[in-house]
Amino acid sequence: MGRFFENNKINAPIAILMKNHLISILIPFKNTSVYLPECLDSILSQNYPNWEVIAIDDHSADNSRNILEQYSSRDSRIKVYANKGKGIISALRTAHYLSKGELMTRMDSDDIMNPNKLKILASALEKHGKGHVAIGGVRYFSDHGISNGYERYEKWLNKLTAIGANYSEIYKECVIPSPCWMVHKKDLEKCGAFEPDRYPEDYDLTFRFYEMGLQCIPCSEILHHWRDYDSRTSRTSEHYAQNYFLHLKLYYFLKLHHDHRRPLTVWGAGNKGKSIARDLLLQNIPFYWLCDNPNKIGKNIYGQEMRHFNHLLKLTKPISIVTVANEEAQVMIKNFFINLDQSPMVDYFFFC
Image (cartoon, rainbow, N blue to C red; front, side):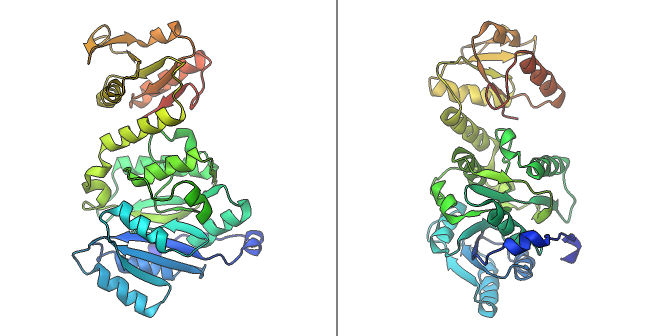
């Protein structure tokens, strides 16, 4: 396990500020027996000792429950319960209900913490106070190597976290890593904790942090090692399929940013653009559908005419959803909006 840890140190002034808040670590688990010892050992190795683990067994069929109970018998800070419901949201809801900590964090049962993770996150919250979410850098690891997609996600996520600009690209992808955040319990409850039954649950919680105005505390240190493997839940569960992400993005866009007095446009006619268009049509929300593909301009899809993106010039104070994933095209699109004196997260929103 030591090969994953880096020499991250917290400076003395922050250490002096530290209070001995109890941290509740919420761990839903299901069939992760092969990874649990490494996960739990990394928690036991924390240099911040005042924590409790609330581990919720989501109907495991392997030896996971026995492993947790063995650890619990040796360290009373580790507590194990059964999920009376089913699924990760129910497990998190149960863990939150049973928790006693002033500070709350979540941990995946197949991942690894750096030894100073809890101390750094708690120190950040102590320094900045309530109304903030502490986040750390993450690093993927796998026995079979990491895909280019995960490498890019890790780099993008850590770049945002280093400057606390996570919300600036919230509609692209989940901008707060589910197992590497910490908040005051009252702030978590103000955001609705784990009550909504919306998937992906980590992305939904991130949107609610954003909605309630919790400020992201910058952190440039790697605090969490995120394990990737073929049977990981985010790879196998239907709740993490692309359509769930798109539905969630549109739900919060319509709730937080849509203004019916401004003409709405959707830029892009690929699969994501079509999915967004279908959802808008089902909700009877009018929009203009734009693209730069000459083979599609002028055609009708779902009864909507595809227009050249220059149609934006004819609209008064438009607000745009961009579903174009190509990076070169995104640069062109950003420059187009800049020339129109439009601003990101105000006038246009990248959903890719």
